[in-house]
Length: 113
Length: 114
Image (cartoon, rainbow over all chains, first blue to last red; front, side):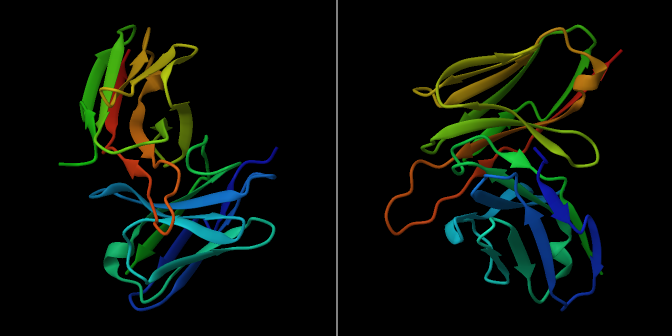
């Protein structure tokens, strides 16, 4: 089976812009979760989608949003980018959800200037 | 106090040594994950535990639910084990009307010297 893929792998944006990141899960997996990793805060949970519904979320502002499509592919959007949004954004897929083994994608490295 | 505490944060070992990384948590969980992250960012799930002990090759993970503590052991360490090891806990089954989140430890940076 193909692994989790994320596009793009690298992205440079300017403060105030918005960005959309994409995640394609392993075939058959219905849960997709998103994470932000920064040197200062480490890994933090953004949200989880299961069968097109947001099922869990972390403590991030409303500028961070996501959605999941009927084929389980997921997108994450960040509006009004701030310098502090520079990070590695990872997604992970799982057959049944957060309490099951997570398969991580390679990540998208976002730099905000 | 962080909900997930990992120790040590940095660890240097000689090749062949037995290594232990500890994780303590203070929240209810459905599962605990041990993750490995190599330079460049890719994360691999090593273990998912809800009770007892699991072994895969030279890696062993244990969890004590009553004490809210887990350990990751590496036997006969090798330079290719050099990576960051991260403990993460998944929330219990969702209560009606509420969101829950995955919580991560800060990570343990392991360097194994030949």
